[in-house]
Image (cartoon, rainbow, N blue to C red; front, side, top):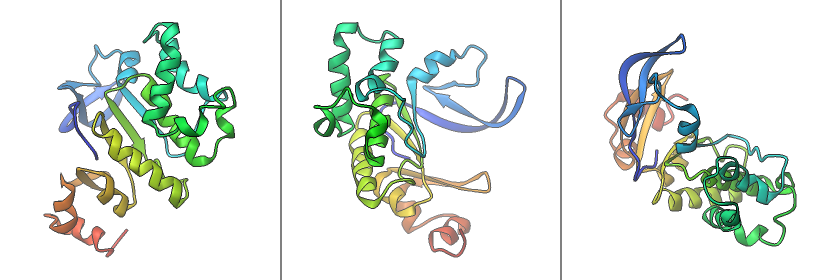
Length: 211
């Protein structure tokens, strides 16, 4: 879990959302996202999502990034090209695609597609980025590029990343939480979790005794 600006945290209370029984809560800037007054469109603008496997839209590279902010009218139409360039630069992809923005995003390599998906998420100007094992389908070189990108982006965004790669968690995160069978066992500063965990279950996982 890498975190700066925005305040996103979980608590141990129980709530109910549209008939589904939930354990715990998720707060964004101190407010539950499961609250009755939550505007889902607004929430999806504030919280971006990058999935395990790259899933660019069947559109051009340019349109992949411009689609969200254009649909939501986040900037005037004339400013979309500048926004697209800014997001692609933030995703460390601009120099690789600037001369082929009208080509399909699906024609990029796997690592490039994942960075395009990150740029697409940034296009909606979110406060929080959720990443679900964003490197699991990538080769080591592409993984390194995405990890470098995460380290850079966490200076401006709150990033919550799920990974089964302990080395990756140690490299990119400031805070780490260890889950076991759906239970949050321990959370704290990454260096402490990996060098002096408080829980025996955390230590057993880190040292490879299970998992």
